[in-house]
Amino acid sequence: MLDKLKDECGVFGIYDKDGHDVALLSYFALYALQHRGQESAGIAVSEGQDIIYHKNVGLVPEVFTEGDLEKLKTGNIGIGHVRHSVKGGNLPQNTQPLVTKYKKGSMAFAHNGALINASTLREKLEEGGAIFQTTTDSEVMANLIARFSDNGFENALEKMVQNIKGSYALTIMTEDKLVGIRDPHGIRPLALGKLGNSYVLASETCAFDAIGAEYIRDVRPGEIIVISNEGLTSIQTPVPLQSCFCIFEFIYFARTDSIIDGISVYTARRDAGRILAMENPVDADMVVGVPDSGTTAALGYAEESGIPYREGLIRNRYVGRTFIKPTQAIREQSVRIKLNALERIVKGKRIVLVDDSIVRGTTSKAIVELLRLAGAKEIHMRISSPPIKYPCYFGIDTPDRDELIGAQSTVEEICENIGADSLSYLSVDGLLKTVESSGCSFCLGCFNRQYPMECE
Ligand code: SF4
Image (cartoon, rainbow, N blue to C red; front, side, top):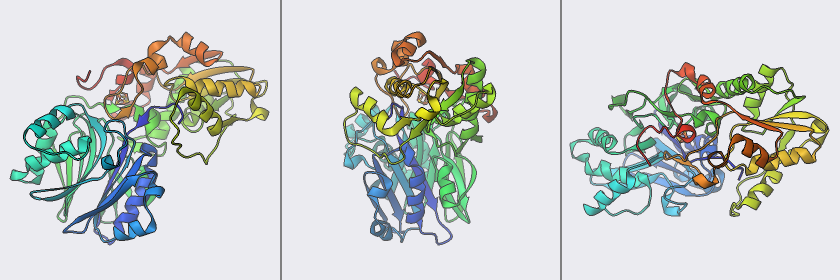
């Protein structure tokens, strides 16, 4: 319940040719992707004739028992999903994979992202007689595929891509095919890997590491990958001149050990800390990172500045989800449950406190207070991203603008609000330098309102 932007989902897919237990591998992969969504989890597998599945609300280990996985053992193709709901709400019927039947057979769908034209498409489909069982974008996409399926499945996928707008990294499964699709702007990540002779797809490469698979490459923006018994086919749909990958994946969403579009998330975060130190130096005794999200940038800041890194904050490793409604007071209290200051380290010291972002300011305020109570002499807050000022329309749970402290207050006002001695953010140019070796272009919409497409 820390004050962070929340990613919506993680997806996985496997086409097995080596006799692996597809359900078990999907389970381990979802475990590795758990940080991308904690509200529900699901796995669907194809047995050749039928698609069977198990899904529910809860964390991966809560949703699956050994018996559930045993029942899914017979499949040779599988997809998996972890979800954090925003659009569509946290309803049991909205859990994924969405498994549906249409005139050509069965299909299972796992989606990370958000469509900006889903309601228009849904209305049109409903006018044409379609009936929906969920409020998800995935069901809209599944309906489009069914509607366009007369000229073959691959053709239907291309037509669906032509009709939908927004962000999407998809794994789709039929009885005999596994499909991976990334939207034409490449907003959300999707990587391709191999495990022996079997292909795997995942939102992040940390899922490949968890199952011993090898990362091959990222699915390209606008690319449709179809994997069948004949091997892998790639269909490249038209793309805009520039891609627009979500830069927040590098700042916070992705796991530090993942590689996205050829860039190590760890290296990007460390470089963000280094550049932050160059742009915003301060005289201090130690650099402290807010665990875990600020740790890597704090190490970079320490390296560049020559100020020693110290563990001044300790994280409680055993705090899971809580179902208590996140009011302001509870958010502040939850910081104390999750973090504690090490008095022995911080007492009487001038501290550079590094975190990846400030959303509402409640967490930063509570952490500054914790350090003050532990006797810190000065606290200089440094943020390894620019101020968040605008909402995200592409699958990220952002609070309303009036709750975003970066939209409502100047940096001086935020500094006063959180009770720090000084506050500085990384510049947009500094942030872009951390990812320049990718050769990609990036979405910076939540910082500068320049979104990849018209969406307000
Ligand atoms: S608006 Fe921000 S969070 Fe949303 S896709 Fe763009 S960079 Fe990512």
